[in-house]
Image (tube, rainbow, N blue to C red; front, side, top):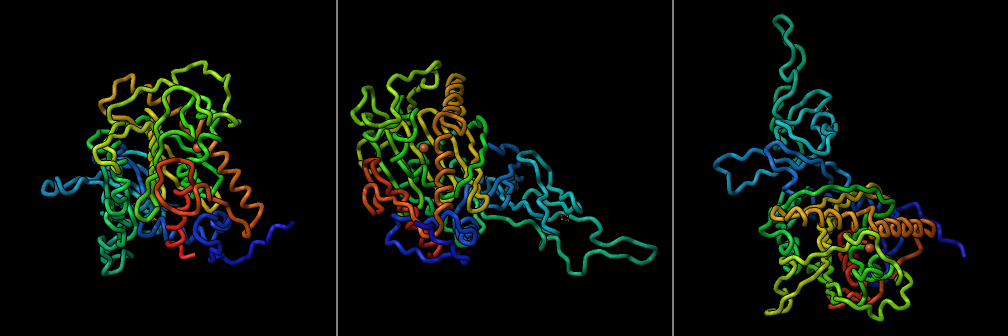
Length: 439
Ligand code: FES
Ligand code: FE2
């Protein structure tokens, strides 16, 4: 059987019904990817840029990305009369208003202003153009040579300023005037799970990991919305009892199906029948250093059950996906944000920021770091995900446009569930994606 030939124009028709069969072209088509950047990353969506704790002092900045555009998250001065209403966080594009140079090359730093190296146009921390050399020309005797034309105003030539919204220390920005308020964008179903981790907390920064994964950016979102695979792909999870298909679990999504929370509680003791026949279960496997599994329950894990008034719930894992580019991970004591930075249809960078809380003991900080290494990109779990994403992309590419994936565990619907034997969160994301992309 021959693979169908790829057509030269961008496909725009999604022929299978519903959102349970995702055409391969959704992952491989370059023109479609350019439309995704415009409609999703540069459109009416809030995109994650970083954590407030990364820029504690005036002048601190961090280089980040929204889609393929570089942006700077900056801590600006706040006028005394604006204290309380303005927290001073700005997000500006890293692109000089003169001739387009990405003027900042450092990932993080502190600056009084930003100076473009090419012709030294100088910008304030809020992105306003403060000045430029030879604006009024150069004097030669009685005459003046050159200079900017009459009517040139500094205020018309600042950096692109994005709208900024923060939530309990998380910083989001958007290029669009149309994006709804952040709280509405996230919605009431997802909010309690963000508040459980962040509300009223002072964060501490524990470190970063960065990795480049040769697959489409949506595959990372799918992976974290997919409770089917952890108890099968991840030998480590299965063998050491951190994830099994019979765990108490819940799949939550926002009203539009684009964001989600995968909530689960580790079983106490005993090997359930669910590990029988699972080939990744290795009965004889033990650890040389079992500090990796030194899990200590924390009081904040327990919260009032948002969907069951009067009851409480104590998850050990919550994986929050905020469309389009953020994952917030709690895996027992390890906490991270994971930021997706697309680089073409077939590749993305994945930036992990590991954090803890200001009132952690030194032992808890060590524990979080150890577990972050366990769950991080070079640990025993996520390395598997990076690899299967690469293998998925390879499979899509070798077949061409005629093929599609099959995401029908638990049916073809897009409802919330009280178990993990489902691909509902993937279907719900593609139902939303189809609408935004008008395919
Ligand atoms: Fe930035 Fe000329 S390109 S100053
Ligand atoms: Fe995984």
